[in-house]
Image (cartoon, rainbow, N blue to C red; front, top):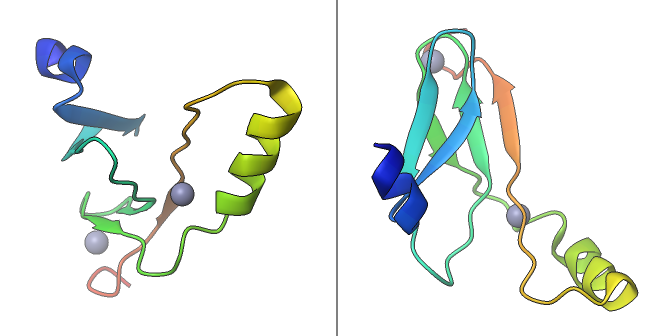
Length: 81
Ligand SMILES: [Zn+2]
Ligand SMILES: [Zn+2]
Protein backbone atom coordinates (compact mmCIF):
# COMPACT_ATOMS: atom_id res chain seq x y z
CA UNK A 1 0.00 0.00 0.00
CA UNK A 2 2.75 2.44 0.91
CA UNK A 3 4.36 2.10 -2.48
CA UNK A 4 1.14 2.85 -4.32
CA UNK A 5 0.67 5.92 -2.20
CA UNK A 6 4.17 7.12 -3.12
CA UNK A 7 3.38 6.81 -6.79
CA UNK A 8 0.21 8.81 -6.37
CA UNK A 9 -2.02 6.02 -7.67
CA UNK A 10 -3.83 5.69 -4.41
CA UNK A 11 -4.22 8.56 -2.07
CA UNK A 12 -4.40 7.97 1.59
CA UNK A 13 -7.09 9.83 3.44
CA UNK A 14 -6.66 10.86 7.02
CA UNK A 15 -6.31 8.41 9.82
CA UNK A 16 -9.29 7.50 11.82
CA UNK A 17 -9.09 5.69 15.14
CA UNK A 18 -8.92 2.25 13.58
CA UNK A 19 -8.13 2.65 9.93
CA UNK A 20 -6.68 4.78 7.22
CA UNK A 21 -8.81 5.24 4.19
CA UNK A 22 -7.63 4.90 0.64
CA UNK A 23 -9.14 6.31 -2.50
CA UNK A 24 -8.04 6.33 -6.08
CA UNK A 25 -6.79 9.62 -7.34
CA UNK A 26 -6.01 10.72 -10.83
CA UNK A 27 -3.78 13.60 -11.88
CA UNK A 28 -5.78 16.70 -12.67
CA UNK A 29 -8.83 15.45 -10.88
CA UNK A 30 -9.80 16.96 -7.62
CA UNK A 31 -12.29 15.86 -5.07
CA UNK A 32 -13.08 16.66 -1.51
CA UNK A 33 -14.49 13.92 0.63
CA UNK A 34 -17.10 12.95 3.11
CA UNK A 35 -16.10 10.14 5.42
CA UNK A 36 -18.54 8.19 7.55
CA UNK A 37 -16.91 7.54 10.91
CA UNK A 38 -19.28 4.65 11.60
CA UNK A 39 -19.03 2.44 8.52
CA UNK A 40 -15.99 3.96 6.83
CA UNK A 41 -17.86 4.85 3.64
CA UNK A 42 -16.20 7.57 1.59
CA UNK A 43 -18.07 9.82 -0.79
CA UNK A 44 -16.77 12.54 -3.03
CA UNK A 45 -18.35 15.85 -2.19
CA UNK A 46 -21.17 16.60 -4.58
CA UNK A 47 -20.94 20.34 -4.23
CA UNK A 48 -18.41 22.50 -6.02
CA UNK A 49 -15.10 22.67 -4.20
CA UNK A 50 -15.57 25.35 -1.53
CA UNK A 51 -11.99 26.55 -1.44
CA UNK A 52 -11.00 26.81 -5.08
CA UNK A 53 -10.83 30.58 -4.94
CA UNK A 54 -8.87 30.46 -1.74
CA UNK A 55 -6.39 28.10 -3.35
CA UNK A 56 -5.71 30.59 -6.13
CA UNK A 57 -5.28 33.38 -3.62
CA UNK A 58 -2.81 31.29 -1.66
CA UNK A 59 -0.88 30.59 -4.84
CA UNK A 60 -0.65 34.26 -5.74
CA UNK A 61 0.26 35.44 -2.27
CA UNK A 62 2.76 32.68 -1.49
CA UNK A 63 4.43 32.35 -4.89
CA UNK A 64 3.87 28.60 -4.72
CA UNK A 65 2.77 26.86 -7.88
CA UNK A 66 0.94 23.62 -8.39
CA UNK A 67 -0.54 23.69 -4.94
CA UNK A 68 -3.43 21.48 -4.08
CA UNK A 69 -5.57 20.67 -1.11
CA UNK A 70 -7.90 18.05 0.09
CA UNK A 71 -10.77 18.40 2.44
CA UNK A 72 -12.29 15.66 4.49
CA UNK A 73 -15.58 16.04 6.26
CA UNK A 74 -16.34 13.49 8.93
CA UNK A 75 -19.69 12.42 10.23
CA UNK A 76 -22.37 9.76 9.97
CA UNK A 77 -23.76 8.80 6.59
CA UNK A 78 -27.54 8.48 6.09
CA UNK A 79 -27.36 4.71 6.51
CA UNK A 80 -25.70 5.04 9.89
CA UNK A 81 -27.82 7.79 11.42
ZN1 LIG B 1 -22.02 5.02 7.45
ZN1 LIG C 1 -11.41 21.01 -2.86
